[in-house]
Image 1 (cartoon, one colour):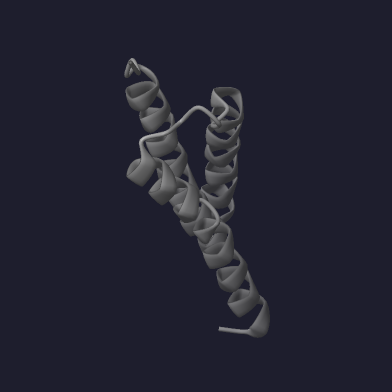
Image 2 (cartoon, one colour):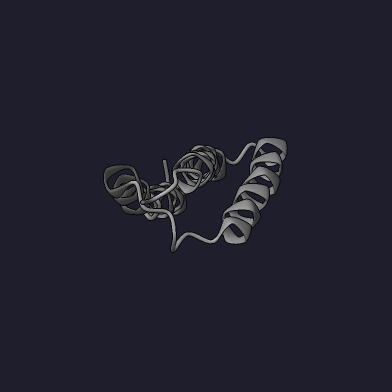
Length: 89
């Protein structure tokens, strides 16, 4: 593995980590009022596009990163739907 692959995997790991605090905070607080559903759908669609690109080019860091971000964005969309439907008294 050369330095560019190490750089790619490092960037992939860091990009994947960016969503984890938001997913955890949303799950813990059950608060989704500040999450924008349109932004989450844009992230979801863009990660699908990046994933297709990564698979077609055989770029493992792109595949790993976008698979993780895609799953985390699906989770945030699920939380937005589930927790957003809860009526507060």
